Image 1: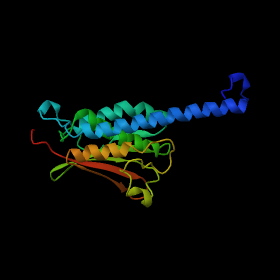
Image 2 (image 1 turned 60 degrees about the vertical axis):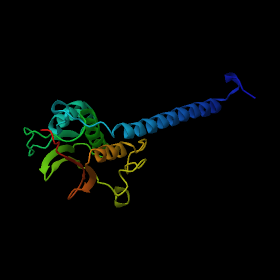
Image 3 (image 1 turned 135 degrees about the vertical axis):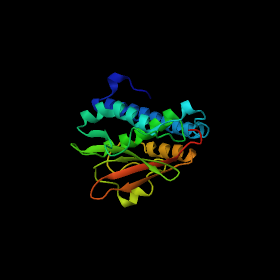
Image 4 (image 1 turned 45 degrees about the vertical axis):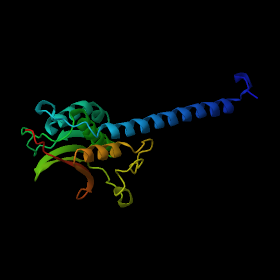
Length: 205
């Protein structure tokens, strides 16, 4: 028996509204899952093959800083490029420009979620044998050991903030690994977390 709106109590209407809200959240979750798996498939072939298309970590990092600085400012958290890194060098890597930017943006946004006010998130880059190491350092509480080893699996959330689906780091892993790279987490001495990924240099330079 369907009740008209006038027959529902205030509590009943609230329960209906909550049900509708929850259904919308579930639909959003499903769409996000589908999008992530679609990205998994697409990333198998999206690798730049010409010099003009090959992504550069320095250019990507600057774009991420420019894009996210307003959000960081509102949260009272600093965002910077490591002043010790050689950002004027060419840091081309295997990959695809828009996906590389999304990977770095995911890692920086993750750092923001776990950063206290008046702290700073720093993006770094350095040369390694056969590739380029990109780092994202924060000054938060770090990641508990029981979560750290599962961070890059599907649906693993961080340790503090509710409402996240746990797919961002998974997307980063499948993308970096498709490009022949590696990705991981390391605790920082004293306080904070370092998320990093290593990508090979392209054959075309």
